[in-house]
Image (tube, rainbow, N blue to C red; front, side):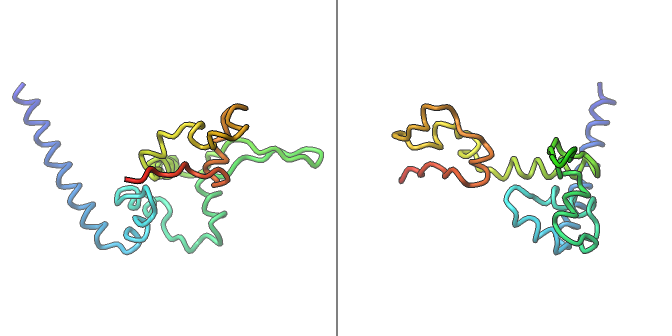
Length: 150
């Protein structure tokens, strides 16, 4: 049992040393400070994005970066009809994971708990015709409910 406790203490020491090194490198990198201004992105996710993407100037646009990261939908077309599918999944799985985590943490806790009923006015006839689509709320076509005043 003592040998396991010593092993855990050694791992804790390694984790602490690695954490200090990451924090030091993050404080020296100007890009980390810029990425941390995005809601949901912290120092660790910013460092992961920088490590995975590298020199961002190699991408002509944000669309090119998204395609490289595998965040764009697959397209199947036939006879002039195009069908969009799931994300292509090309690129770095770690980068996709980090960006999804950042997006989920970017929502404030009250916004994560909202239900569809909160997004429609109580007197609206649409309130009883079923819940609105989440995509409409995310794109801003459905407003957030008013915040209660203190």
